[in-house]
Image (cartoon, rainbow, N blue to C red):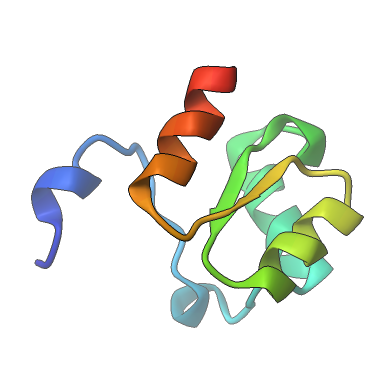
Length: 79
């Protein structure tokens, strides 16, 4: 599996093709929030697509547009 070493840090990975839902659809974000038992506002969302980030923000989720690894590091450091 590609990136297996990186992904082993995560308890669960949500794949849109398996879910039958895609961001920035509200249902996709809500399904994930429900599955992990966290309110949308408590999920920090990272994506490299402006429409997905805007969709998450419209639902009250903190979201980061990722253009480089530094964007992720900066967002996490700010926490």
